[in-house]
Length: 73
Image 1 (cartoon, helix red, strand yellow):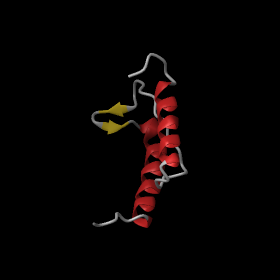
Image 2 (tube, one colour):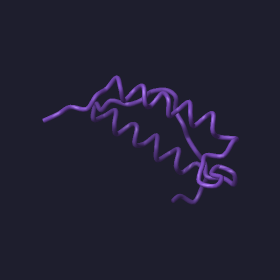
Image 3 (cartoon, one colour):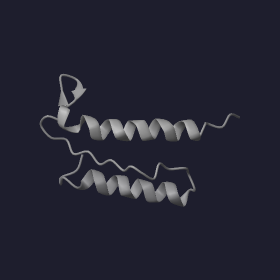
Image 4 (tube, one colour):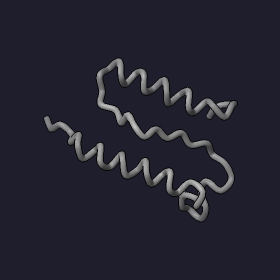
């Protein structure tokens, strides 16, 4: 948890730079930064105001994962 509203975005950007340095595959787009606010989650579901944005990210992530299958030992 951070003191300011931007803390999570900064932490995510730092993590991305570490992953790049380690040459790990990353989902480049879309980027999604979520700030916890009233209405983000309603009755255990993503709130109506954020649903389309989150679904777009999830769809892109699922497609990316399918294109980058895990490596078996």
